Length: 158
Image (cartoon, rainbow, N blue to C red; front, top):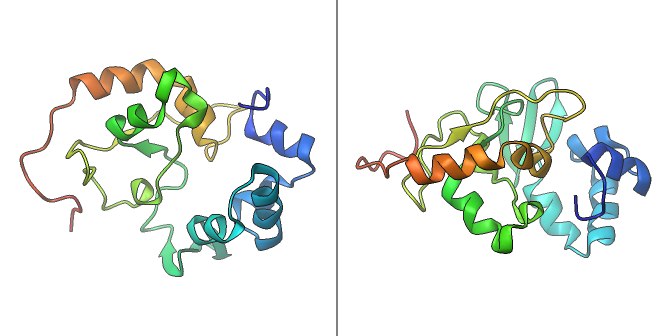
C-alpha cells in the first residue's frame, strides 16, 4: 500500500519477490524483504510463519499445525488495530501471530474479543493483512467502538 500497489502480490511482482515463497516464510525471501524495507531480517524470520511440510508450520521455533492456526481467516484485535494506525494510515497496521491461533479468543492487552474478518475475495490474498484490514477498515473501527472488554481473564480457550 505504501508503494502504490493495489495488492501485496503486485508489490512482490514489482520487487522480484515470489509471493508463495514469502507466504511460506522462505529464508532467502525474508532476507530480501528485510533488505528492501529496512527491517531486521532476523526479526522477520523469527516472526514469520514458516511452512515445514503439509499443514505444519513454525513461528519463533514453535511448532504449529493447521489444527492450531487459522491461516485462511484474518483475525485481529480492533483496539490494537486502531493503535497501529496513527493519522489514519491503514498501511501502518500489522498482524500478530497470536491472533491466528485457534484457541486465542481475547486480546491480552485490551481484553477485547478477537474479530474475524470475512473471507478474502480475489484478487485479495488471505495472507494480505494490510490490504484486507483496509477493505474492512470501517467495520473494524465500528467493532472497536462497540465491543466491550471481557470480564473473564481467559485469553486462551482450552
